[in-house]
Image 1 (cartoon, rainbow, N blue to C red):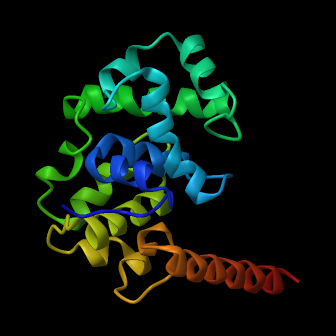
Image 2: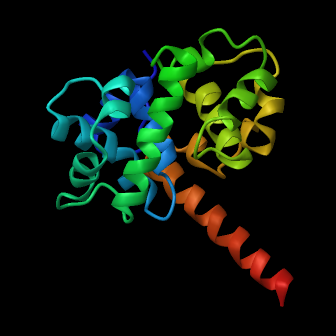
Length: 193
C-alpha cells in the first residue's frame, strides 16, 4: 500500500495513507498553517472522536458547537478552529450527499483526470489550485491515475516538480517545496514592484 509522509509523523502519516477521508480533510486544512500541522490534524481528530477511522456521516451529523470544541481543544487542530471545523463538516456533508460518505468514491470510478479534477473542484473548500494539487498527490503518491491525470493536474503533475504537497515524500522534498514557494513568492513580489 502506498504511504505518504505529509505530516512527518509516522502514526499520522500511516493514518493518512489508510484513510481517504483523513487525506482529504488534511488537504482541506492545508491553508494558513504549516503543511505538517494540517496533515497531522486528521489523526488528532480521530483520537478526539475516539475512533479508528473517520466517518463522513458522523462528522457531517455532529452537533456544530461540539465539533468546534473538538477542533478548539488545546492544541487546536488549526489556526482558525471554528471556521475550519465548519468547513470540514460541510465537506463531509457533500461526501455523504454525493459519494455515499466514502471519500475514495471521488476517484474510484473517475474515467479521466479531467473528470476527477471537476469532482475535486466541486467540493466545498477546494478551488482550482487545491483540486489540481490533490489530483497530483493522488497520482504521484497513491497510484490514482485515470487517463490524463498529469495534464489535468497542470504543473503540479510534472514528474520532477517540487512545488506542492504532492511532491513531499520526506524531509528533503519538504525543504525543496518550501524553497520553491519562497522563490515563487519573492518573484511575485518583485513583479508587483
